[in-house]
Image (cartoon, rainbow, N blue to C red; front, side, top):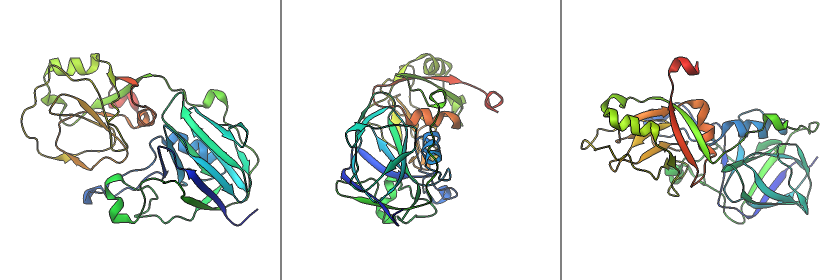
Length: 297
């Protein structure tokens, strides 16, 4: 096997980036957790090439890249239902793929889900920052990292010993729908909201705004019963926190979310459902379902 496997991004796609589990223990100094928007799919991709769960992967959003391979190695894709080609053949998903110098991969768009993850067997040569390869959106200029790939960029891996081909069974692959039920628990400011607002929040169907990114998903619909109570004091927030803006529109904070925010925090999406959030794209619909901590433990 070649000493290095290089992925040349002839076209980078809409938003293609390196992600891992993120960085922890830095929120008290204002640094976001970051990390993959769908950690289950990330782990599946890593499993398919024999990596540990937390090995950095390539997160591909909405519109995929065009990649030219240099070197020999194993790769795998897991996550959203992207269409693509490996040379002239359909690109297989959820299985180990052998690649060699001269191979080309072209990913198009997705028919279901928002993000797909590309893992390569081995370790990237890219440096980490504070224990993670994920570049937090608002901190890129301080880290020397790039938030996402550009046309012409190259990512290099040191391949490990190849493994026998692995396939994820159909029954274990994620299923994405255009309307998702998200389980939430009450947030720190839940009791500040009027009963009418709370009822509307749980009865309403919301849709994802096009003005959404890795920091947060804005929802298009307004809570008609909500009236802002003036300026709020900034408080701690985490990925999954649902805030209500002054205009009455909810925001679901996601992987690159800031560590404090001034909008009231009505609920928090349960950790297990954050992967579902990461696979929602603009126009997809969702509803919130209140659960207790006992329900999810």
